[in-house]
Length: 136
Image 1 (tube, rainbow, N blue to C red):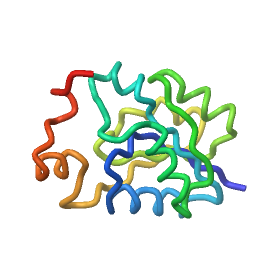
Image 2 (spheres, helix red, strand yellow):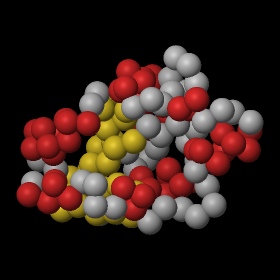
Image 3 (cartoon, one colour):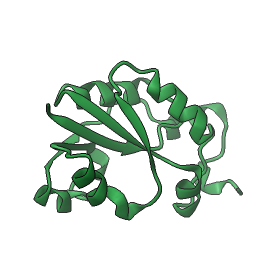
């Protein structure tokens, strides 16, 4: 069985998120999504519109996703890859090169973003402040 892993906040789930998950799943048999916790987002200076529990619930309902685990910090990726016997690490190409250190442990793939859609764009269109401007 070929195992794939990806990471993200997956706030205000949209077509781009689902396309990323679908393409990630196509690279293997089993897809794990590491979902940024609210606490980790706060460390990054971000605040998701939707709670961790609600984002997890929605992700678990997507047919491409086999499991959702919490992302609690930047440094857990190597441990996640090793502990879960991951074959392929997948991220959007806006992170191109940032996770190449994982190539010692698994294949690293950066997938192109879906044009014209992003959580940032949705928030802007709805008049919601950028999450970095929110006060927790």
